[in-house]
Length: 310
Image 1 (tube, rainbow, N blue to C red):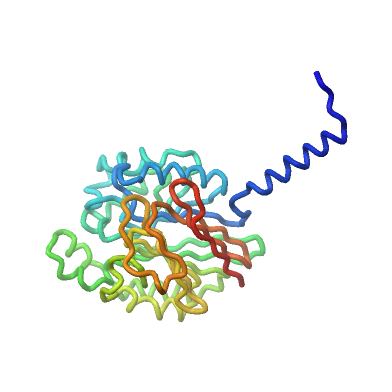
Image 2: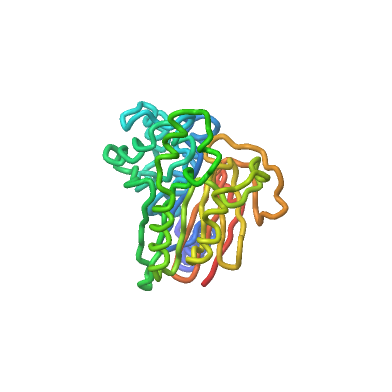
């Protein structure tokens, strides 16, 4: 066997280290997670392809959890916590080992068309589905002792047009919620927190480049000024079936991650920092002074990335 000199071995080792460094796609972080929305279509419309790439990204990025931005099950949510569609649209699709972490969902309008309470009850059946209530929060400690605070909102009851919807039980489900109580909870939570990073998650976006761009946005009217007032850094939404990033103010950043399965064409992108009709998801990497996110498509390509510093 041909012998290699010590010098040659060290050179080869340096080359391998350099290759490993240059192929590191995702940054190291205290907390890392994925964000997916508008996805549960029994594997169709590229849902399986997105799920496969989520698994690969989840492994490489060593994710801690996954956030959903709603419309978890199409077309009309679930009938019960035992509905077979849980298996065909969720459990049998997101099979990768890295995806067996905690999932933190919010409800979308399609979830409200079925039995939204059953999505909360499913938390008692699934190890990874964690939805304790229609709105709730999670807090994480960062390496310098500061905190990441995430508030998960229930935005459908704030869309006034839903109260006149002809479909039942959708209209009754929406009307049964106390919007004032939710806003008080959110205001108290955020105002009393000294978290370094404050993130809110809801289904409906505050702005969009998608088909609903020119519609009256009741959710934005209810939430945007409040989010700015209480110091929210980032709002994550779905509802529109594409990927988009906007900066609404010097403080408030805004994302749409609603491309987990069926996508739709964009209407106008002139005000967006990034918008693309492509299947994919977002990956977040949070450190005490830096928040970085990337949009990743179903092939693993990074479509857009951004750093926010404090």
